[in-house]
Image (cartoon, rainbow over all chains, first blue to last red; front, side, top):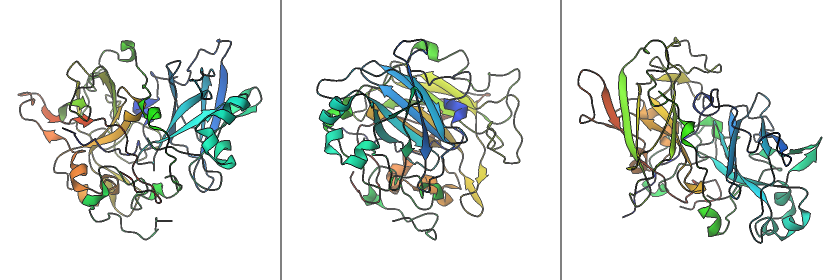
Length: 165
Length: 243
């Protein structure tokens, strides 16, 4: 017997009440800031007109290290995490799995962020290597002021790759 | 691009559309610049079996499951009990999974700075709850029935009463954020978010059932709503109509 799955609906503009607001906050630290491997990952969530999405929410998941976090976006569409580069699965490059929620997104979207200091592993990764150059670039963070920077574009020329899920 | 600025707010039912939401549903205007406009990339099946996050039981505090007992006094409104089970597609319970909810107060106002609807806030209502499912996959909240509220999507737009739900489940791909509605709401037929699920049978899965058995005499009405966290299925984008 297969039961139909419950459909998705948008997270809406007021998700912070239930998902990111104190006393829950902060939930955006996958590792402690004092961890020697800790790196800040920051970015902006941007819509198809190039405008920041100020009512989005990003979840990041390291399925190897079992570390999870989430961050709302601020007035400039910015999200931030404290992460450590996960271990790689055999034959793959290290990555974080990322979920994007927002008002206007009737279902969350799934993407990934890869690490810029893993050129060799990234080139050999089965998912990254199946993409064209622009698509691949959309999934690799760039170093910036000692942190990692990675923007998420929902649409347009710079659109981030999203995966079926 | 499929979206048209002058498209109807509510599109006709489409039983063949499949069980998922239409991600670029044009009647919900905010989809226009936010729903992905390129085909989703399909990755190998093994990626779909990634485990999801597991939360420690300290993630839930006392009264997190009773939204009427989080302040000094009781909130105004119609007290209700909302219960149900979280199941997989084979009908098996999903145990110990985190369920998070949030909602407007009885007047249709959220405790959020962006919500400027001129209806009163309730000092005794925050509108957020969480709990874990038990060994039968059951969850239970006590809250008040949320009010309807206007929004800017189209002229005279009002949302049907709803409670937002966020669920995880054992695998990454079962993650679900959705909304639970109340039976017989007169606003259903006008609401593009509800109708973004084009198949009327699938849409019914979002509507709770009035539950006289769980209704507590002299105290609170009960509504029952089961959630099925399935794997796979992505909604649809303009260039991809897979189910």
